[in-house]
Amino acid sequence: MLRLSLSDLDAPTNSSQYEPQTLLAEIRRAVQASQRCIVITGAGISVSSGIPDFRSPDGLFQQLKQKYPNSVSTGKDLFDATLFSDPTMISLFYNFMGELRNLVSRANCTPTHAFIKELDEAGKLLRCYTQNIDSLEKRIGLETSLHASPEDSTDTPCSSPPSLVSDCSSLDTDAIDEKKSQAAKRRTHRRRQMTLERTFTRAVQLHGDLDNVVCTICHTKYPFTEKLAEEFCEGAPPPCPRCKEIEMIRDLVGKRSVASGVLRPDIVLYNENHPQSELIGTLSEYDLKRRPDLLIVIGTSLKIPGIKRMVKEMAHSVHACTLRSKRAGAGKVIFINRDEPPKGWESIFDYYVAGDSDRAISLLPIASLPEPPPVQQSVVQRQRVPRVAKTAAAAPVKKCSKISLSSLLAPTISCVGAARKLAASGAVAKPIRAPRKLTSMMRVVKSSAAAKRQQKALPQSPNSPVMLPS
Image (cartoon, rainbow, N blue to C red; front, side, top):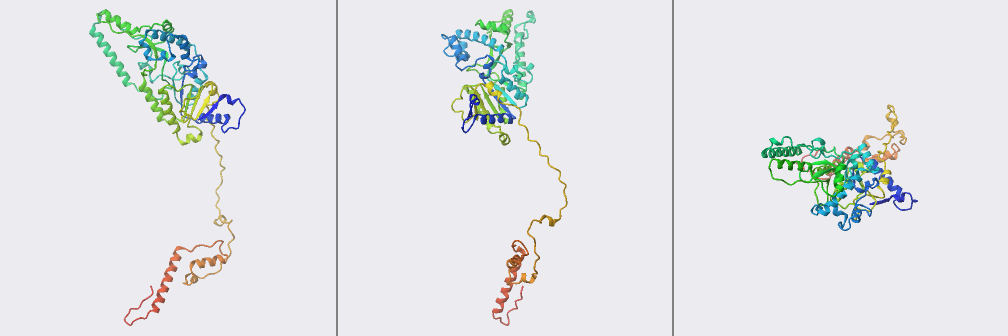
């Protein structure tokens, strides 16, 4: 992992192996050469908008600890699902969420959010995974819904749920139960039949958002309005309107009362499962199969186990991208944060940019690298060149002396010797090798001559047959 500090860019260059400008040029090239980028963000990208992060010395955890020293040992306690078992913690949780919602509603998008939007407009963004609950990605124009048709989804916030009090006089117990069962079957059928458009969602909110509140019993969603924020600030959880309406109907028809839910922010706390975890897992698996060539991790401390696992899987996929992308300069994993990454991440990240995310992003252009201009080949007219002209650069050929064919076939003169005789006469520039057919012919001639000499040397009897040469 190579480290680039933004403060070193203003300092004079040193004689180290990796100069700041050289590292910055490599990171720029990786961003420009990328065609399939994944961005994972944390609370650090929203600090410049006025929303504090969690784990910094002046973050939310420290603020909560200083604000409630007698009730909160660590700020993380107010983001744990076990708080609902303690009435005191519940009051503090709702009061803090009401204040946080008002703070988020006044926040504006940062240059880092604009950078992610530019990646999407340039066609380079596969997807953005964010841990933030401020919904600034949605405000800048990135689609955060997990369904291609939000109006058909049960996650769509409804300001006024369908009223059950249509005709209380004609309702009886069986009719209410049948109507509820039919509504539940329709919701289940709608969820099963809903097809997920895998490229529809541009920003996945891993921890929910503060745009909506949800009932703890019937899971009906409502917009997080200013009126609800005021009730939250009082420290008392507001009741669910739908559950309250059902309770009133049951009281009218003489049914026993059932548990009624309260409204809580639609966020995911510690020790709590995400209600859309299956859909998020499907999206992440699909993105891994698309072979991303760049991963940018911005503004996160990498403390949550789920985020750590996701970053490692995405980084492994980026490092295994195509050879063409690597030759262009992509195939890199970049970490941008004020604090150093934890130990053990040196082999995961290729570059660590230490400093403010907004300033770091301003140094990274998104435009693709310009393609080299095509080579203009001149049209050459093909001309018929005489065959002799092609060997004009060779040595001048001298007139060959006459050599009879019988001398080449004579047993006492070999083919190689004849070729050497040609070379010595200056007829050719280099000695040549004897052809294979001619060599085999000379072997036959030599063998036949040796057979004749051997036959003459042996005494022949009168009854022996006459051996004719082959």
